[in-house]
Image (cartoon, rainbow, N blue to C red):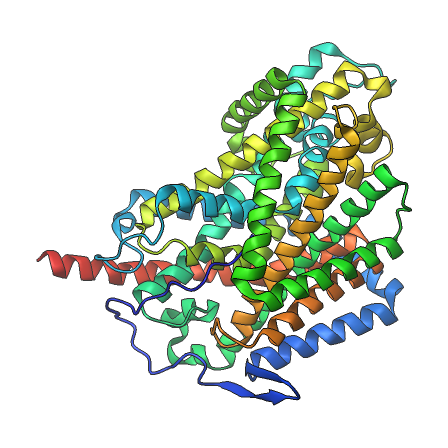
Length: 549
């Protein structure tokens, strides 16, 4: 995913006046041959805290691992209902925006027109959802949910003695895919809608800086440019850092597993650290080359390779079973949407706590990153059009990907459970990073396609890192988008280092802990954003009524 150049024009009118100028609190200068342009408080606090975290985790890995595990246990065991209520609430908020008069407000003012046509806009929304997760979880989740986590208490096709019950296959396949769609569908995109809509309204309609703190102007007034605003932006930096570090850590694990599968390279923390270092080095080069020469070119290459990869799996595998599974999973997702979303009265803790809560925290952590991207490309859309399209279009594309990969793997599993590598890697000896390669092993050209899968994972790694560094740099440069390149390179390096220390400090549980630890306070920030959005939209509606009169 890449961040497009800033299309922000001057706001049409604004009922929220401020004398604040973007970058007025920044410090500019040179450090040797490198220039810098930083928000003196947000950058310094974020950078120092990140460095302290990295150093302490490296010095005390065992203690850090224990803390990480405690955070995961608290988040998934104690705050599970809280996270589900919050994310369900975001969906209700989005639906209210669609049906209420707020939906007719246009981002950028009544005379604004979209900067991008529908096809281009849809493609960029799809790109926002593409990432390492599609490769890592595309096979893993449907198979795991259908046979192990068992959403809503469905029966496993495998009995206690390991024998396969053919009568349970259809229901397990449908629910396994539906359970996967829940995690990648409109719940996550509702989180992104809240963030992107807040950034869009306060930037395009109110003329405030392209910064997360701007969304709190209705609540804090001019104080938003002081320490209250600094705290919000610093929290956004950490949320983005740990959300990205989770993706980078998963990408390193999967790339290492693929190298073991294809080339016999050992799977261990040392190899994964080397992968992160090498790919972060490539990301640094990409960041130095800039948006057009680096991020954009890699994103275009990645998109083409991902599409080719998808169609290979679709047509080289059981095509009819893949398409049928996708559709059956979609039907089940719609019919079981309410039970799967319910925060109370559940007995499927293996699914809800270990999976759903992690995802809701992950989406909250990614909200500043993806929300900024979506806001950049959505000027000129009405609120109703924006909400409907952002909720549905990327979700549908992701459902197709997950449906085809998941249904293909499930078909392989149930056709030959005794010889299925998917069963070995997902059910018998849980090795999530190998699940994709287990599925590819039963398709033609498995070695070539597994190598392509590794390359895709690595490029996703690079594009996530350099795009994330652009977002974090924007936040820590006081809303400026043209800060010196060394600052972006600094944040790309920090992202890689945090991914490394999280892997060394506890592997997957540490990655989950980093996400949930930042998502807890940032979820409160996003709840308050909903109030600010309504305040801003009320002002826009009053303006529309005055114009109509």
